[in-house]
Image 1: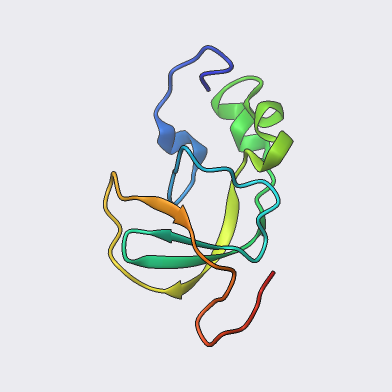
Image 2: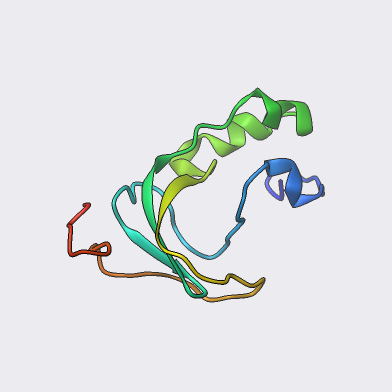
Length: 100
């Protein structure tokens, strides 16, 4: 939205969790830790027409480099708080299965 020069409620993105400061493109199989939780990236979320309804040009702006986000599977549940550290872990999910 910053690129488009607009300010809107981040909830318009319809994301369950909104993160910043971490590159998500081409991370299928990687393990992301947020707070106490560990999430295995399953793939890219393709921005839908709802993004265009929210802000003109948003759908196209979100398409490159997985900017629409990722979907994940919970590897280890835990409490997540606003402001928690977001970081990549090794590519091994629970049970030692390599998902890369």
